Amino acid sequence: MKRFLDVMLVVSKGMDCVAGAALVLIMLITSTDVVVRYLGHPIPGAYDMVMFGGALVIGFAIPRTSLDRTHIVVDIVTEKLRHGRVFLELITRVLALALFILLGWNLTKLGASFARTGDGTLTIGLPLYPIAYALGFCAFAQCLVLVADMVRVIHRGRHD
Image: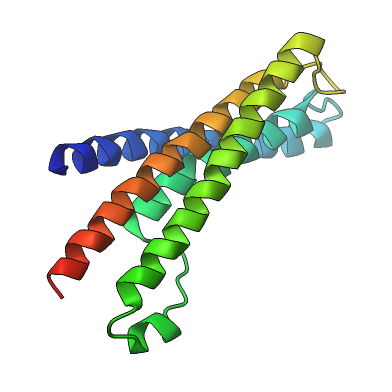
């Protein structure tokens, strides 16, 4: 199980690098567009590219954020619980797992639909299906992170 956790850490770090690169590209596109727009030559499709980048930043950052537990956690109730804390933490992860399975499945179906119909952005016609597939991949990666987190909760619960 240690190997699984190590693999998930490497995968989530890689995904986090993709999110960081997308964020840098968003900043470069936006900054460049502001300057060249002032000069009278806006970047065609800048909005589309920033929109895609935002989707990639959010999707690819979720697994690492969850694995490192750097997201916001409201643990007022769970800190007071002695015996039911592990059970409550497992239940919340199972519910999150169900949510991300549905999300990943539907994003994959949406990507297939976009690929079949050839849908693209209105401004420059960038295809939508790669983003839907990428976000579906992110949702399934988050499922694996949630499984790893459940293992961590069970292991910690045995030693409390």
